[in-house]
Image (cartoon, rainbow, N blue to C red; front, side, top):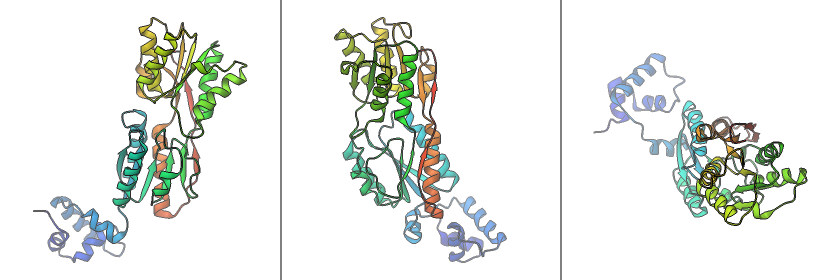
Length: 329
């Protein structure tokens, strides 16, 4: 039988109101001796507060929701870990909603989190959902992380890396290494695509003619990288560098190049994006742009909890990226 607050009060020799105040951290006028006695009994008994009832009473669930587009991509669990570590240190829990890059699943995730009375939402949109329609349905404080949202409402927090500049840097690195025919393999977005624009800006500044045959937009996954190279090879296209929208794409690229006996980096140089753990242990080790995923999540959680607890206004936070030069270039 579950232990109740009434049981705790009886064992401690105090009122239920006193126990409630201690559980809900509203105990500033309760003696330290009483507080410690009650907490020890709570710990020994295994008592778990009724969070639903407490949420209704306090209008706070001490829970943050995180909507992410693809939990199978190792980049997003790093963001999630940053959110969870910061949230836990502040007395908050986290609910993760994976949408598989599906706008309908995003809508369901928003409805679910609204029904759970979360105190705030951290949101990374799907590659098909970069407009403001989903954001308008979120009823709580909101921080957009990683991918920007077009036309986002006032008061929304933003934590991101300048991906246009980062993609410009990675493509420029290939140019500096002597590449003249650089392919782009990435994923399409609704609206402005920072990564595609960064690539095109770099080759334009280098005076290289734009060749749309060397642009392949699919998903942020291994299969996209592999299928793109298969298409380029089948069409007889010449390329000596590949700028990839993320590291999973780059790993697919290297797999396909190896299949066709095309050497990396001797014949084709490859640059990824994100710096997931696999980038460091691939063979050859992948040159890539490091996005500070953990720090991004931590900052997003810090921003939203500061707003919830202190009313501190949420703004924009741009974190630095860094090119990690390894064996593929």
